[in-house]
Amino acid sequence: FAGNGFKHYLELFIRIVAGTSLIFYSPKMFLGQAFLVLGSVLVVTTAIMLFIPWQIHRRFAEKSVPEALKYLPLIAIASAAIGVFIIFSIVRGPNF
Image 1 (cartoon, rainbow, N blue to C red):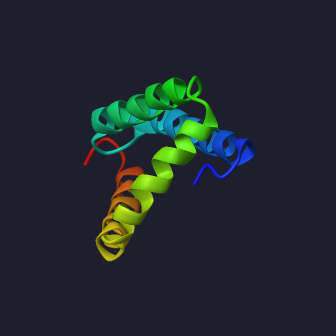
Image 2: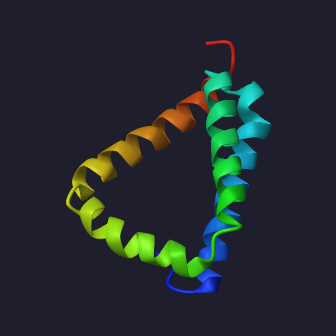
């Protein structure tokens, strides 16, 4: 949760890699336009976060994470469903 600068920038690096991957592979995926938009949003928001000091990110996380944890089972189910849908989209390709 952005506990220090290293974790903050590691998170941003992972977000850039994930967003760039979605952008790059979107033409080969089912609903490719949606994944292009999702990847673009991820890259743009990450670029904005590069200019926000990690301490501000940490303060935001300290406030928001406890609230989000109240919905952890729902977040877990949604995350798993999205992961399965991404794998489905890759396997099925653009010509579903």
